[in-house]
Length: 350
Ligand code: ADP
Ligand code: MG
Image 1: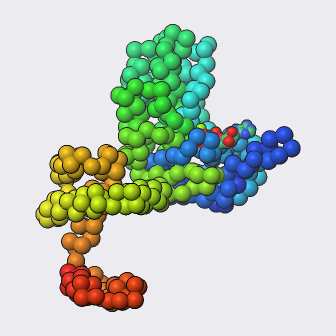
Image 2: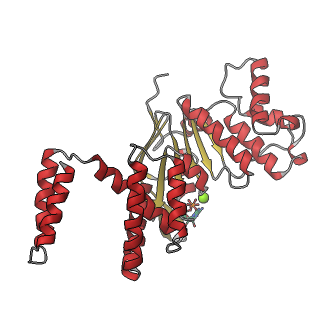
């Protein structure tokens, strides 16, 4: 169909809720692009506008400013027929699954195939059984929703949303009320859809899912920030605090971690087992909390990795030399130890 590789393109999106005669700004100048093949996690504090953003991208909410293009269709100013058509091509996994009580589980799931066309009856039946089984409700296809537990109903809702293999899936905390295994089955389905050229945007706080995502975006104060930025800021704060309150302990531990990291990296890569031993060894020192400790370890590994690579580009090297001199001169006196350090750093890096 010649759809663009960017399945979602949001540019300068702003959205406000009317509260009485006052408008509450929810999203402010949000821009983001979602490519085919990606599982993107959207995270951020409660009330930061994650659900609002998903409903706008899903064509479920209008009256916003900016540009929102979904599966090649611009949603701003779109007719309601266009919005309906776009919604049909999206798999929605929301907490309220809205199953029809009058239909069996199989019939409910089949509703998800209605608009996809091209399914022969036997194919449809096979696909429904396949996805229901994958989600652990294969034995309940002939039952009615009221005969299922809440979690099973949720899974039926997910099956209905994904049965037609939509190009775009929007999921709002899909695993929140699911057990670990079902959560993993849902994530496996998401991965499968992304690998087949689709895209999944999901709101979650689940740490395990964050680790698996191709990309993590964070909403804060109505703006999208990349999570790497947030983490670096947080990490900077933690280190600054430690340095201010416990400089000696931190320095000892950093030196210690640095040594471990250099050995771990000596063969060119750090494997999981090495990380585990380093972490345990730092933990045994009993100085830092686990959260701080991970930071110290990753920092030491990153530093050892960069330094171990040596060989800066020549222009970087010149700049480094100049910058090192600036730092040495910053307190208006350059001492021998500073000069020796500079010499060593430059020879290590070149
Ligand atoms: P999140 O999903 O990140 O928790 P939401 O998108 O649900 O955040 O909500 C963002 C903000 O919009 C919150 O401050 C919420 O109170 C407000 N809000 C949500 N829905 C409405 C509404 N229908 N009318 C007015 N304010 C709303
Ligand atoms: Mg929400």
